[in-house]
Every structure is written in structure tokens, then in C-alpha cells.
Length: 215
Ligand code: NI
Image 1 (cartoon, helix red, strand yellow):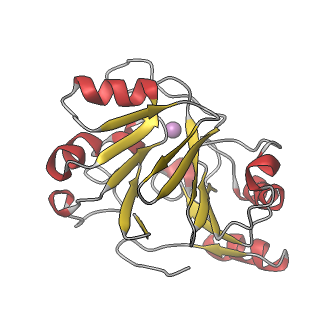
Image 2 (cartoon, rainbow, N blue to C red):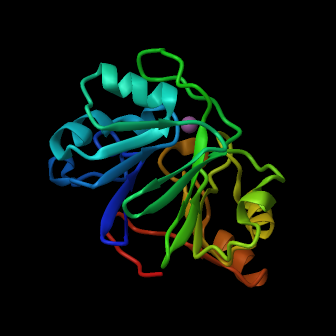
Image 3 (cartoon, rainbow, N blue to C red):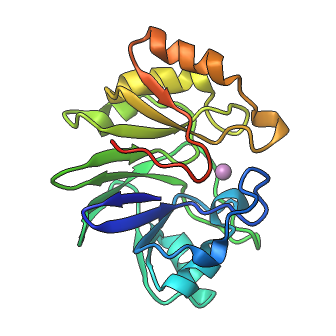
């Protein structure tokens, strides 16, 4: 969850069956916006409940928002890759992601996506699940991003070496790690990863569940 320009934006809620999020009360989560990058269960699991209890605006690729509409979510804004829209806290642009996107019931989730979020005070890139691609250089071009949320767990997404390469393409110095440790196949050595980024003059942030940072 990110707070910017007076609004809270929640990304890809995976809480109920997440072994690392035990004790987090889903019923207390009420964002203003919810952004869903793709249809996999470990990104959309709690989206329906949170959308219904908070009446937040859900943003994502058209196939994802249409699917949520069918499940009874009323406020959605469907987009597609390369498109940008101005919301009341700033703009969201959908970026490509190298991944897949099947929804929990087997429906097609369209193309997986990432998000570039910008307003007068903040800007950041949330890549979603993705492998490395050199067009990340275009996403970060002339942006001086405050942070980039990048997967580092390998196997299903890029690993830490490629995340370091991605950070160079993006021209970003602060990276918030995602998509690691939840499953056996994506466990990482935190100190090794941190050191790798330190050596390159960047900071890799490992956030603890329930903690906050200010950028
Ligand atoms: Ni995924």
C-alpha cells in the first residue's frame, strides 16, 4: 500500500493464504485505489473482498477489471498496455510485463502489466511479475524515479541479478524488493542481495510485513 497525494493505493493483495502475512486482518484494509497487475492468485486473492468492503476504484488491464465487474465489483477502470489515465491523485500508465495472466477460475486475464505512477510530488514504477526486458529503459527515461518495485525471487520472475540490471535500465537508485520468500522456489539470501545492490551504489529495500518507509 502506498500513500501519495492524500490517497492510498493498494497493489496486488495476497494476504489470506500468504504464509508471510499471517495476522494481517484483511477486513481492515480500505484503500482508495487498488491496482491489479495480473490474474494470478498470489496477486488477486483478496481483491474481491477488499474492493467490496472499501468501494475503492480498481485499476488494471481491461480483462481483469471486466472479470472483477462480473464478480460484483462496481468501481473499475479498465486500461491496456501503453495507455495512461489521470486520476485524482495523479496518473497511471500501464507498462508491459513478461509473464502470464490466468485468473483463479481459469479465465483469460489478458496481458500482464506493470504500472508507472506519477504526480507532482511522487513517481514510481511497480513492475508486477516480469522477466527483464530492455524497454525498461524507456519506462525510466527522464523520470528520476523515487523507487521501483521489482521482483527478485527468480523462477517465476526475474531474479536478483536481472533486477539489478533492470534498475540500471530504469535509472533508479532505490529498489523495493517483491516476489521473494513466499514459496520454497523463490527464497533469497537477503544479505547477498543487499550487498549486490550496495556495490552498484543502489539501495535494495526489504520491507517487513506491517512496516512503513518514507521516500
Ligand atoms: Ni504471477
